[in-house]
Image 1 (tube, helix red, strand yellow):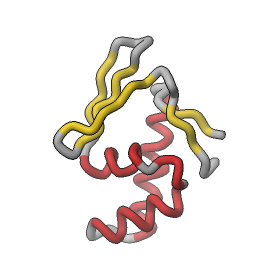
Image 2: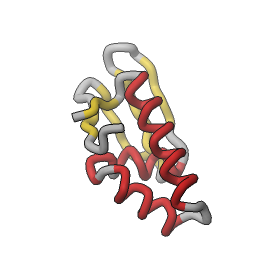
Image 3: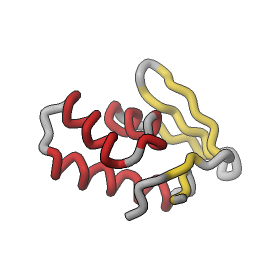
Image 4: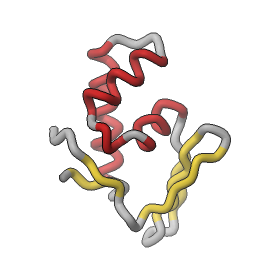
Length: 86
């Protein structure tokens, strides 16, 4: 998996009470991310390794589980067109 990602400019977003709210402008869909998803979204450009470090320092989760969950979430973001691999 590529470790460099870019947010789709067609997706507007804003933090609301600690959660990222994504608006897929072309699809007219709204996606609300949970706390961990919001951290990943806000810091996406830092790369997977840094995201794993951030999540494991904030939550009681192993590095292996954090990496697996982050990579799965990033794959889902790519599938819905919210991000692109660079």
